[in-house]
Image (cartoon, helix red, strand yellow):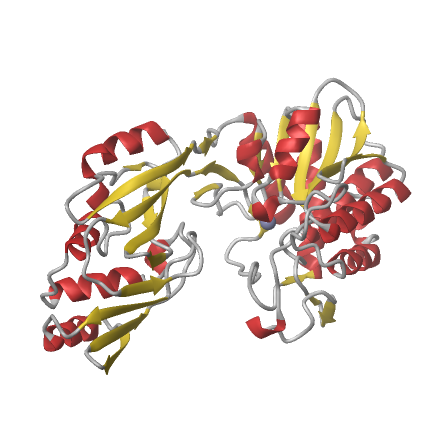
Length: 453
Ligand SMILES: [Zn+2]
């Protein structure tokens, strides 16, 4: 039998296993002595390991941080690295069904994690079973590694690498087909006001999301209301102004987007502050913000407008707030895959401060980059192409970060097919059963390619 027929023979089991894993709410919980990320992630790991154990694979539980199932023999190790934890899901977000009860409608499955990343893990389980059933000769070991803390810092993977080391070839089915050979580096920073007349300002929910709503309180109307209205209208910005006892409250509604694609959003903080400056407001902090950040999402004001052949630097201001008279906010910078954090920070050195405020750089993380011609990337691409017949879509670089940054010789490969939006991290996350089966086929072929690489 061929891989496809073998994979399809496990269709019912795939759906049943995924349903079982989705029913375990594995959102990060309270740490206890033997549950490093709470009871949910631990139970999801134990359940997945039981499944693989019952399949006859050798399984190991690394203190409930991560676990793995292994087959094959040899020095070299091929790793498939997925995660069993999920981001929170509540009915109020707009779910049509209970997020922790997998529901099948036609050939589509709904539930938190059906795509990211429990679906991919179950597809990888089926790929392992199929290769074993087919008695594929294995002179390398193949490991399905499952972490339980990917969504909140990937401490699971650090623990795994500490105990077990790196892999010789790996892929994490937690990104896109036909493979992600570059992930941008990150610089995160905070800015602070030194001098401002603003009474209060607040906006944003997370540093890695474009701020979608920002409210400022000012003492009196100290700007041109006509100019402010014109600025907002010219830029199609939704806003509200309230006057109360000499206090003006202005709210701007923008549009959220992921920090790696800030141009897809409308930053409420930036439009609000730039609008006030255009309207003639005199304020040192507003001047600082407008000259250092403003409406740019490419780092121009901070001296780090950089790009390489694979993409440009992006900058996002996610949160702003005022505490004890000081305004502070977050800056999320994602820089090109062939550059270093040093290069980015060097460019910023002369742009970090003026009378109105200053920027404090918190952290720099290096990018991930493998040549598209490397053995790893080309073999994974070949697996995708031979199974799907899609010769058009090329491997890509992304602004986000995956497990691939935490373990050597690994890239993200799957689980999202081109031009598909599975509502991951959102309400009504879904996946088609046929897509999971196709994933399993591709993973099986990918392992065969890597065994022969
Ligand atoms: Zn994920």
